[in-house]
Amino acid sequence: MKYFEDIALGERMPVGSHTFKADEIKAFAARFDPQPFHLDESAAERSHFGALCASGWHTAVVWMRLMVDSRRRQMGEARARGEPVAATGPALGFRELKWLKPVFVDDTIDYTSEIIAARVSESRPGVGLISLCTTGVNQHGEPVISFISTTFVERRPGTS
Amino acid sequence: MKYFEDIALGERMPVGSHTFKADEIKAFAARFDPQPFHLDESAAERSHFGALCASGWHTAVVWMRLMVDSRRRQMGEARARGEPVAATGPALGFRELKWLKPVFVDDTIDYTSEIIAARVSESRPGVGLISLCTTGVNQHGEPVISFISTTFVERRPGTS
Image (cartoon, rainbow over all chains, first blue to last red; front, top):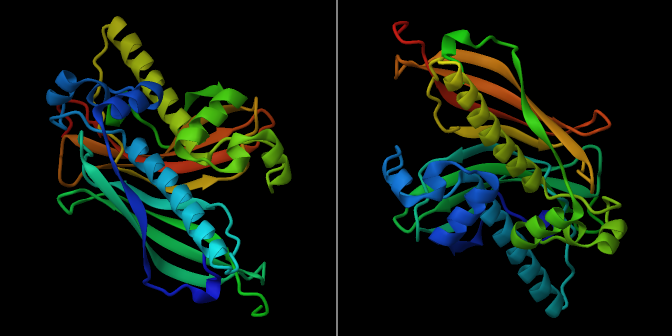
């Protein structure tokens, strides 16, 4: 992660993409969201979704995994270039989590985050707060999930 | 689920409780949130959490599982009593998802939902919309997660 001062409003960051296979859709659902349209093709055909689709929570946690991997990769690359790496905090929470379309078997979801707000913390002068709007888009260009998260980012040393 | 007309604002509904074991905390994190403080006791002790704790997404999806089980149990009981069962839709989304405290190994989280808003749908007269605030509380009485969800509930036949 870059320092707070190096982050521009409106900046878009690729997070990664993932193809949802039938087996993993069913395995996640069996453990955490055992509704028929996430577990069984025939039951899903008779449901309002019309075909097997992933739990909305599955599409959310796959983003989490891609985000952790992406951040780790970026930090490794920055360190390899000898650049300093700004500390970030865990997300404080999520707003406006929306499932906009079903994610069907073999759909590939591409996740991107956009910086929609940035401000210096009032209580912690060495820290900035950024809000990101993350969207997952399927291979047809349709948004399937979106949410807003807020997280801490370290300020450039000497700026606070 | 009861019909929309039978649901009272302020009504609190128990969802269920779950004890987070070290093995499942690590297994979930390895798949979806591989950060050191969710994966390894020693790394977690050196982190700002101070001890191994569950991914926030893990505490959210465990609620989903308990909710599906609870709804299914209630519907089975209602059918066994010969009562009609109102249809409910999938959640349309979540607002204000907050992780308020870490969930540590062997913490037991008890989830409860409260009806905080109810209105008839303007576009679908046979349907009501209810908003629920769900809170997960640990064995010390401390809230660890909260969020607001909105879902459809069928109106009592003949009322619309």
